[in-house]
Length: 416
Image (cartoon, rainbow, N blue to C red):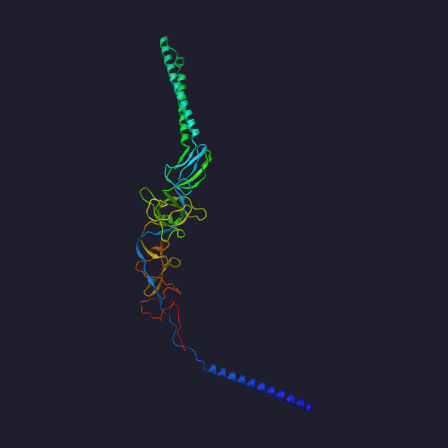
């Protein structure tokens, strides 16, 4: 039993020694491979000094002359003429005009509503009868005065003026005349009331609402409907106060600035309407502090033209491109090329020059410059990663001294 135990222990020791030996050999072999790899790796070698290549850029030139800038504004369509119809006499609606429906069109003088006029015709006849009676009384009184005048002549005596007037019935004659005038006024009032039972369109109009129907009972002040004129709509637009100086408001024979209107969301592509600046409203908008102007648009519903023009809808929000006053002797440059702090990048003798400019006005597309830039200057249009006065520049057509296009930063060439 003892001999077998010793044999097992000897086998375990022999296996452990072999395992340790194999691990040591593997570690040594791995270390050898690493030594060979690190000692045979190629090293980087500087081939030349740091050098800066010229930046490849594109350039453009401004345009010198006189131009009309475009002022961008947003506005809301308003009616130039709007009325709320109201009844002026009592009555029942007996007839409605064919065009007097929401969305309908009516011409000036066209029937809108006729009230039952029977009571007013009767009242007119009564007033006429009263007038005839008053005129008869006046004629009788004139006859009485003639008789009194003859009687006074037969007496052949002088009377005080007060007594003479009484004898000649002058007070009675004045009373009769006053009765005639009152009766005539009553007839005229009855005729007016009768005429007011017929309500007509005061001008060519578009019907927005109608508040009554056949059989409706109305009284003075009852709302009947709402009409707006068809000849002109207004667009109430807002512009910065500083841009008002470039707008022209009509003055005598001088027309206002022309405007082009469009609604990108509702109108067909490219569809526009023409308008004209009509008035400057002398009050700033409360929240934005912008100035308010009125742009007049004739024939807003395109009823008097054969062109396929979009309608202007009341309350619609539209864009206004207003042509401003002429700016003379300036250089016009794409506003995208005006850099920070009102500067432009110029290419002068192959170098970058950062030059400040004086901008008279900027619209959506252009900057109008009166100082700091000439039409011959080459304006850099490329965005540069490095912006530094004197930076070397080159054009695509030039023979560059760099290795292809560069962003203007220093580059190092490395070789193996």
